Image 1: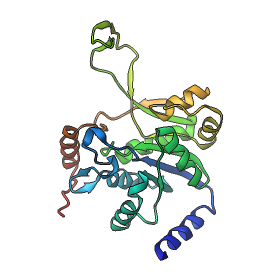
Image 2: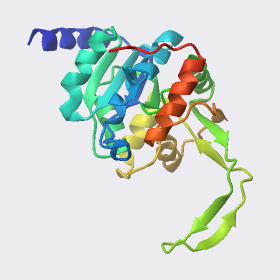
Image 3: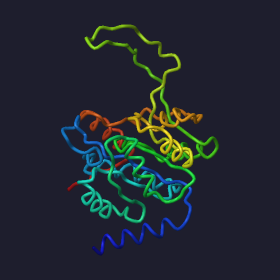
Image 4: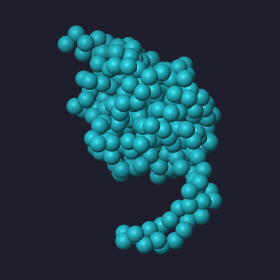
Length: 248
């Protein structure tokens, strides 16, 4: 009870002023392709996946507060680890929804007032403070910012039987990454006026609402952990940057 009261008091203090940037770290996914391990708690160099994005966000000095979105049954475990790593004055927790859009909507409900909302996938553990900063700066200037990387593989359109229908040209095709940053007012309006569809990223929601979304070149090392083999790649990248292994 005391811990819950302290969390509420911290939340009330933070809500008393308009912030510049609030970050949503989306980690409510079930992680079925990872053997059922929730994405936020994937073990990366001895730490949960969410640790790395929170560290990068905090170190920029440009993110006022982060909201970590987790499966409802893992909120208590998440808070224990938030306190363990010393993030308790920087992070709020909320339970996610069935879809990405629902998870963002739940984060918006508890988010303090801010000019910008930065949204990041918890599975992109190699995000750098520089990429986060660039997203915020561009959104300050243009109202939105989405990192993209050019598509390098040959793309095929295939039917349900596996028959290749056609080869797509790669010209002008890019893969979207996070962090994606938007004006809070645009995000709130889109959520309140559009039907709740399962958009695969937040820029597509804003595009559907009619917002002109700006992009910038992302980072090829900002990969998304989807399969178990991706953990080794992410760990190799982090180790090359001097990240240590935490022994339990």
